[in-house]
Length: 269
Image (tube, rainbow, N blue to C red):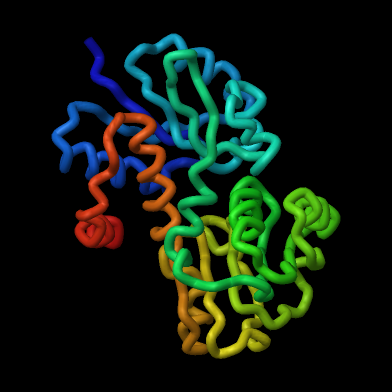
């Protein structure tokens, strides 16, 4: 009998650190299962889910670029992820079949949960699936005006409206306004992608720069923030936070977060 497994799907996918994270937790808990990375092209997404639904060993998958929105066209959505966040990053097996959910929002909030962002201005870069989760999360903690920078400002404005956030949508070339928090949700700065070119001069000394990109971990944006002496949060915090929620859905046990320091060392090796 094939042992249980889960996976992460995307295109590209070679950069994913999810297999290392989930295999580390499986090993620590002594669970005889596997977690792998599988490249799925956009035109193969429907066939992928049909195939996996018929495989009893498959426990689910994490979903990354560019499938987070499209996944909802192929998987049941009992929790109305489409109506809330509008993008799924996790698909898992239930007694009733497959179900889509999103663990990105909670994963994003975990490293900033102690901050009081009520009424404070925020800048978000990007308007894709990850941006949807971040904007949903920010709407729940009552942030002030949000400036959304995107190649297509019209798309950004629509997202702000979707999540009931006041603010403005501007092109990527716009001058950065002052903000308490800057979040990059785009793929800019990721290995193999163009750099994210922002001038951080307008940010106050107590601003936090949060880049959800984790390959490389030290992005150009974070380097620039460090040079200005700003506090930063890298992509591993959100990655591990959202992965822990997915792990329990896949394998039925909480992720052993007491080993986070060791896990981070492995991710950085």
